[in-house]
Image 1 (cartoon, helix red, strand yellow):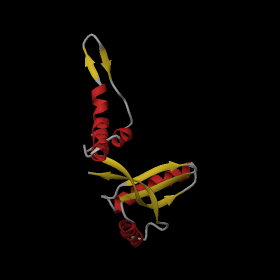
Image 2: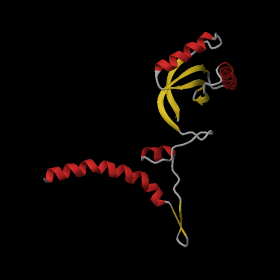
Image 3: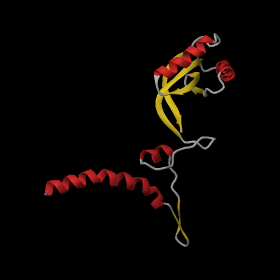
Amino acid sequence: MKTFLLLSVAWLLPVISVNAQSKIVQSLERDVPGQGKVTIHQDAAIAALIGSDAIPVNAEGRKVLKSNGYRVQVYAGNNTRQAKNEAYAMSTTVKEHFPDLPVYTSFNPPRWLCRVGDFRSIEEADAVMRQLRATEVFKEVSIVKDQINIIW
């Protein structure tokens, strides 16, 4: 009987723990007249880890999650101003040919990068890479592992 009770409690503990963690932030934030106001500022990634509903949203109000995935790299330069201009020019060119494809231009020391897409599988990335190559505008395209945005 003790073993059954112990196993029942052990199974229930994670369920209670997750529920308690997701509500702890809301329970700590208060605004009680005469006693002060408590406001908690935390990174959205922390809130997502503890099961909170505070998932970041994009400009359209849709939820955005970060995940490991793939992007297609269309440009990689060095750390000069010319490389920066070329990266942004490549970004504009991609948007002209593929307006629905998200484009990410960034400086990842020591180089400027222009990457496109948010692909969960390498097969999806490969299909877009082939389309980019078929235009004959993008010469050095390759698939890279990257942190992607999942919008839902």
